[in-house]
Image (cartoon, rainbow, N blue to C red):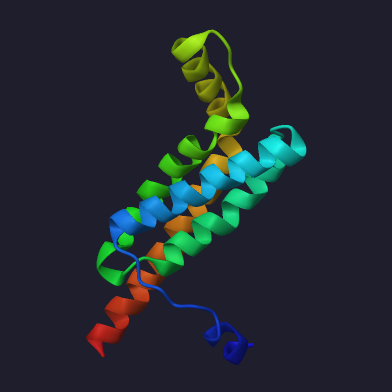
Length: 131
């Protein structure tokens, strides 16, 4: 299994790059969810978890603290296509806030995933440096 995991790409994104990566992927997944599943929050939430994990895995060790911060922002940005809303900008903002409130479990879960991965990576890096 370790050999199979080593075959995966190992990019090292900066903090800004990790935020842009997760925001772009979540916006594309939001558009895809809106087209295929009529904006159902279940698929969007399920797809958010691996994006959060990949963002935390691919960010540089120096920028580990940014992963749990950029992931919820990308969730909010990606929810624009599935939020709906009518009545101009105000209606769109209310729809996004409502979507975030109704999907808080997915939002907290993905943030927790990113936080745990970043913390474990940081602890391993400190132990490696200590040795």
